[in-house]
Amino acid sequence: MEKIKILVVGCGNMGTSHARAYNKLPGFEIVGLVSRTPQSRERLSDELGGLPKFDDFSKALSATRPHAVAISTYPDTHAAYVRESLEAGAHVFVEKPIALTVEEAEKLVALAKSKNKKLMVGYILRVHPAWTKFVETAQSLGKPLVMRMNLNQQSSEGQWYTHKQLMESMSPIVDCGVHYVDIMCLMTGAKPLSVSAIGARLTDEISSDMYNYGQLQVRFDDGSVGWYEAGWGPMISETAFFVKDVIGPGGCVSIVDEKKGDSDDIEGHTKTGGLILHFSELDSNGKFMKKDKIINTEDEPDHDGLCLLEQEYFLKSIQNDLDLSNHLSDAVNSLKIVLAADKSFRTGETVHF
Image 1: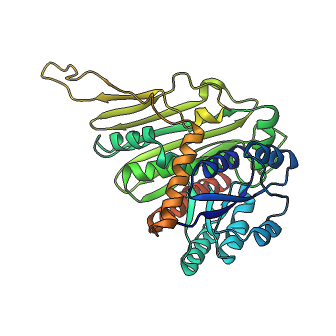
Image 2 (image 1 turned 45 degrees about the horizontal axis):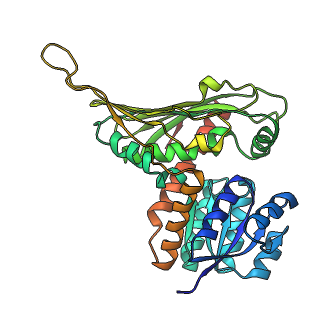
């Protein structure tokens, strides 16, 4: 079978992990690396044995004529790069979010369909074995569900610079929130009814209309509710790093955060120390009938391993012509929810769907 020639756009944390995956998978051949930063593309090219390097996306696309493009750049470039790639006849893998507006996202999904090309969005938690178990266990607890999640990141130096760059186009609850809202939608299988949000601007190093801390609350039509919290910056507390709990009539399941490391460590954003399943059933004396169950997740993949799983699926979708309609519908839906949360913060009003 012919190898899929792929152009890697973005050589930061995510771009590097995806490039390593393509380098390992015999079905892919990397035909170029694109980055605005010379150091990152030189480093990655050297690591992978010397690959063609570009500082301009359009020129790279024209020169390499790839079968597929992987986009791991800042969010404000995603829509334009996806559109140009699809118009050039390439399949596309793009890191979340697919675009900055729902309208843009829907147009890109329609374009991919019209071109008969695969468009896959990087929702890494969907391929994570432990998170898959987390979702399945939550679904066994009955309805409604109460979902409590956060990902606060205490950042400094280079990571704080990256966060400030990201906040030139979107807040933390939008950038990171799509992952966790997506998980909530998977857990409930329900439609969102409304979203509200609060937030705060905790630094003068970002635009006056941006906020680096936020929390959203979402209500679903099955009675389930969820909240998600995200904050970035040197002022964020490490003790506020990691909460992942789901409560239902049958009990609760929680991700244990043992040995996660610092909050700005990308490995810790997906890593689990295990799951604890609590059963709510009481006996005639009002005592718990079952002890809490520990679900071991020690064999979970690291961050590069998760990206490898993602790219194995991307390759399979191209080679086997998989239907990604549901995947794209979910991607647009989660984007719709977090953008509604952003609107709620800015207007002070609950957004109803």
